[in-house]
Length: 343
Image (tube, rainbow, N blue to C red; front, side, top):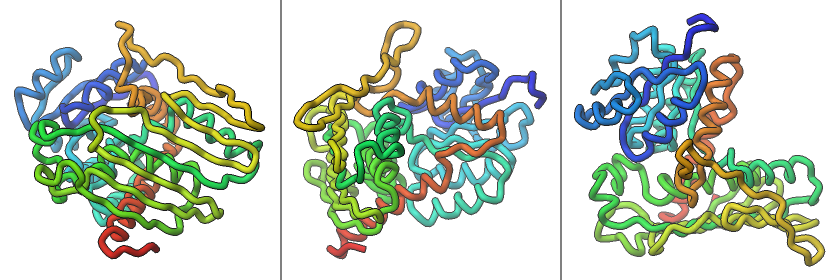
């Protein structure tokens, strides 16, 4: 591929998250979506039509194609590790939806493969690109509010029986790898460890409060986190609410408190609250919100950044190592729930 030729892209998996990836690729200059892949031929054809690209049913057909440089994985969790491994070995850059894999051992094998490959591997934690998340990082790095004392993340969303019936791979240990932790709240856990740094202790529990007769896995989880630098974290997540509300974040510093509400970031200092960050409107050409506001709409930003790193040959920041950090937290929380201790 010369610098003048467009980067050829493929998206594997044509489910709910597919339009965000395909739409983002379509918006990028110098990138061409060439193939969409799904094991269901009708679904692949339907997904390919708006983008005037090929439809395929087996991702292995991509391995020997010189016109495909980047492959997006939007498949069920248990397929991520094997697909990423095969694609990396073929020299393809891989951008995978979270999680990196459906269990820790598989994720560790992907990390080992990524370290051997000259190709990029990126994990989609799009909420790191939210305007409020970027502003929080600015405060942390500048230390203008002093030492971080504690932080919390709260996720109250709704998933019902129909959600799991629509995609039977969900709700099962063997295919989803967990419940609310690994599918929905993984983004908030990722932000907590991105803000707080290395986690040295996890104590908490997981339960099925509302969906125990529907799924094998948890719909609710809570945890206390202790960070290396001394900060404490509190985390709560559930799919047992009756609506989807915006994620709530709070970081308490020596010199003030940052609080994310309704995607706006506020600073409280000396008894006065001020708005310090308001997210820009993230709209498509039709004026519609890109993504779902309650879980963030920054896929476009992350995907564009990934392609910039592919072009430059520099390492994308959210690689396999970052994907593994959050999976380790999840694994420790499951272990703590089973044994009722912390580590």
